[in-house]
Amino acid sequence: MSLLRRREAGIALALLVVIGVTTVVQPGFLLSAGGWRDLLLTPAILVVLAVGQAVVVITRNVDLSVGSVLGLTAYLTGRLFLTAPDLPILVVALVAIAAGAVLGLVNGAIVAFARVPALVITLGTLYVYRGITLTWAGSDRINAGDMPRTFLGLGTRQVLGIPVLTIVAVIVLAAVAYYLHTSRGGRQLYAIGSDPDAAALQGLPVRRRLLGAFALCGALAGLAGVLFAARYGTVSSGAGTGMELQVVGAVVVGGVAIFGGSGTVAGAALGAMLLLTINRALPVVGIPDFWQRAVVGALIIGAIALDRVLATRRSRRLAAARDTGPSDREEATA
Image (cartoon, rainbow, N blue to C red; front, side, top):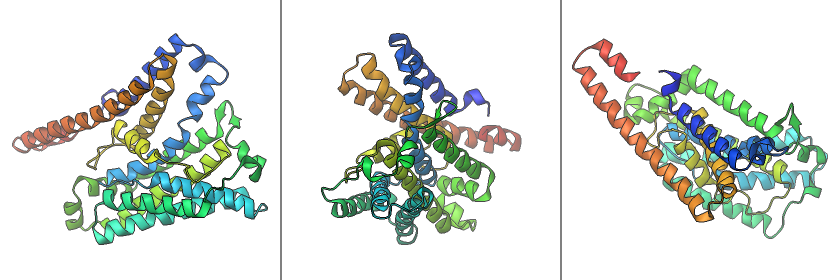
C-alpha cells in the first residue's frame, strides 16, 4: 500500500495543518523557546498509553483501567522514593512497570478465561484500582521535595533539543511497532482481532496472546505513571483521572479499528499528538472551551464512521475478488 494512502499519512497531514495554522496566528506556538519543547513533551505520556491501548484494541478488546493504573503506579513511584530514598531510580521504575503489568494481567486473565467482555471488566477494575489508590493515598500527596532531583530532571531535561520523556515514548513506540509487524506473535494479535473464532479454530494461542496484550498495556501504563511523577513532580490520588477516555480517543482517531484486526501503534501515537496539539491550539486561536471538546468529539465520531466505510468497501472488494480470481483477491486485500 502506498505511503500516501495510509491513514497515518492523513493524520500526520492534519497535525501539520493544525501546527501551521496556529503558528501563523501565534508564532510563539512553535517558534518560541518553549514552543518546540511543549509540542514534543506534552503528548509523551499519552503516546505511551496509546501504544499499549492500541495493542489491546487490535485484539478486539479495550482497557478502560489505564488511567487508574497510571494513578496507582505514579503514587507507588513517589511512595517508594519517600520510604526508601536510597533505591536506584531504575529499580523504582521497574517496580512500577511490574506493578502495572500485574494489574493488566488481572484484566487479561478475567477477559481470556471468564470470557467476559473487556469493556465490562476494565470498567470495573477502573474503579477498583482507583479505589485502592484513594484508600492508600487518602488526602496525602507526594511532593517534588519527596523525590530525587535527578529523577525530576527526567521530566524537564533535553537531549539535542528533544525532551527525555519524548525519547522514551519514541523508543517504546518503535519497539512495539517492530514486534507487531515482524514477529509471529504480533501478526497473531491482528488475526485474533480480525476473527477470534477463526483464530481459535486455526490453533492460535488466543488466551496467551490476550494475556500478553493486556499485560503489555498495563506495563506501559505503569511506565506512564513513572513518567507522570517525573513530569509533574506532584502526585495525588486523582492522578490520571479521565485519561482512559483520552487514550481510547487517540487510538480511534489514529486509525486503529475499534472492532479489532487493523491499525498501527504509529497511528495511535499520531492520534495522541493530534488530540493534545488541538487542545493546545484552539485556545490560541480564540476558540471557546466548549468548541474544543466538540472538535475532539467530532474527530472521534468521524474516525469511527470512516472505519466502517473502509471496512464495508473492503468486504465488497473481497467478495467481488472471490468471484474472479486469485490475482484480484490479492489486489483487494492490498
